[in-house]
Image 1 (cartoon, each protein chain N blue to C red):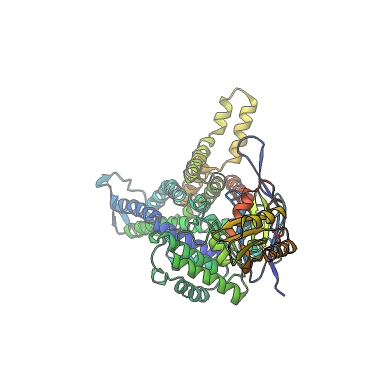
Image 2: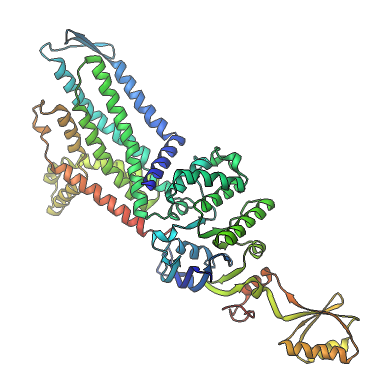
Length: 322
Length: 282
């Protein structure tokens, strides 16, 4: 039984506007949990509240209401960060430090001894392929290298929870793959829970197994990638011979959505019974079926649908926890 | 302890990398060199036979012993060091909080398992160590030059360093408070220098009060005098402590009050800075 390491419940955050007394709601009562070994993606358009949620988890900002806990401790307790690694977006590791010095200073602040810092620094910089830059000042680093060093700092104290904000920003494709592999290995081998905050949906899709989509400060959808991307009500039907217009019309009469695409038919049905009724119609007309499969949308499709939806309930996909 | 060590290392490395440390000690060294080359004393059999300042002969009263001359010189000179050390220290350390509070940097510090109060106090101590090392360097060097030229060892000179460091600690607490509020190094420096001069001005509070027409104005000035650090009185204390009662002047009479009220000011600033930093949202 895996343990819950991040718990967010009823989290609200309102900011006061600089002028006047109006309040801006960044988070409007969100709930989610992340279990150990889970790779959890936090998605949402700009201003959806993703960064605010992460900042509350790190006590960089305080909630207006609700609670955020890490490893069972309130986010306000510094001890909750003992086993937390964080890579902020647009982080600025002091440019006057070398990688070795930066890892030394932040390692000490995390309570590590010199021997462990030295061992882990070399190990991580090797893994992230910047070991040869260990004694070069950070100001000489490229964006991708700075990002790798930031990840090394986040991983230095072998955290139980990793909070990453755009971790592959500025990193080349090979580097992205390597970072993805490192995160998945950390989750699998050490049970590290990873909370990934990114705009790169393909990256989230490849890395994470669970996601929550934030919109206007609320969780618009949450669940496994499998659940969110599977659209049980949409099927691809490939008949042996092209379906005629009469059959398409009869499908439509039954209430199904029909799209003809390159010789196959995309059907939108109410449920499995409806689908079977359409298959029966095809067979009754002498038609044969060569393929029938559910259509899986990409995470990007789900995201765009959710973000565009006027009513949060309108785009609710089956299996999603709203 | 690890947090403190990490902050000391960070502050020293930053000071070195940004040339603050080099400039800080370079300016101090120039001052020391000028001082060493400006004074030329001619000591014969333990007595002062002649003295030159910047190459010019100085008229000497033969009745003055070399010990008294050194004591008089060091006590007077400690007043110069009081201003020099304080200004250099604030200039070299006022950025410590604003730089840490920069977006993208503060997240790295605050995501550690360290309370914010501990973090800001560690940085404060690191700043004091940086300033203290310069005070020690300046006073120690001047003391050695004087000892080398006169063969008179006058340890009371180091008391000046203690008072100077006390004032730096107070003003640095104020600079930290302004840094937490404004996140601006320039404002921190200007405000701290302002407090220094305002403190000097308020030393004449009795005369200012007498010149004011309204009672509440006089009361406000008196209140301000007791609130602000006593920069003028502490300068007098530096001279008096180094002289060690050898100079009989009413102006150099020292009471504990300036120390107590200055310490209270510094302590309140430090507590306020820690409290605001603890509450601040990033």
